[in-house]
Length: 341
Image (spheres, rainbow, N blue to C red):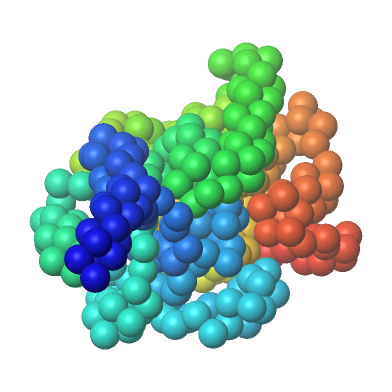
C-alpha cells in the first residue's frame, strides 16, 4: 500500500507541472495559466468578440445578453452560455455565475494601473482565476493580439490567419494614403453626443481611423482622459468648418440637417455627413474592436471615392466570412452598409 501511494505521488508530481504554463501577457505581466484552456471569459464585449473570432466555442460567458441581431452572427451552440455582466462597467459581474463557470482565464483589456482594474486583479486572484491582458487601444495592436490569443487558446493557425489579414489591411490602406497629397487630405470632424458637440483630439485612440484613412482631424491636441469626449462649442465647429462630419449618433445624423446654424458648415452644404456602420459593433469606435479593420477600409473609400477603387460589398463579405464564418448575400451586405435611417 505504501509503495502504491508513493508511486501515485510521484506520478502526480510529474503530471502537475504539465498542467500549467507561465506566459507573458501583452501588459508585460508573467501569468500562470492552464496548459489547455477551454473556458474563457472576456472583461467587456469587444474582448468577447475577439475571443469568438479566434476560438468561438471556448467563450464561456457573455458580459451582456446578445441581441437577436447578434445571433444572426453568433454560433447558436453558444445560446446556453450565461450572462455574467461587465467587469468594467454597468452593474458589475454576477459573482455566483462567474464562479460556477469555473473559467480557466479572464481576458482583460484596459489600463492595468486603474483602481477598478486593480480591484478586479486582487479579487480574481483570491478566486484563483488567472487574468491575461491584451492590447486593444490602437488598431496597430490588433494583429499581435489576434496572434497572441491564437497561441493562448490553442488555435495558433487561426490567430495567425486573422493577424495576417489585419497587417495586410493596414499596409494596403497606408499605401493608398501615401499617394494622397497633404494639400488634398480632407478635414474631418468626429461628432459625438446627440448635439454633435463632443469630439476627440487628433491623438486620441478613439478617433485614430481618421488619420489612418488619410483624413485630417480638425480638433487638434492629445487625449486628456481615457474616456475622451472633449466638449466643444458650436462656434468652434464653425471655425473648424470641416469638409466631412463623421458620427455614430443616429439622432444627430437625422436632425442636424434641420439645425440652421449647422448649415453654415461646409460638410452640411456638400452633404458630407457620414453615419458610421455599426453591425455587430461600431466600425469606428465606442467600442473600439476588430470591426475597425473593416471601418478603416470603409472610411478611406468614403473620404476618397474617386481615388480608392475598393468594392465595399466584396470587402465586407470577405471580412464577415473570415472573422465570423458567414457567407452573406449581396443584399444582406448592402443592408449592413446602408445604415442611413
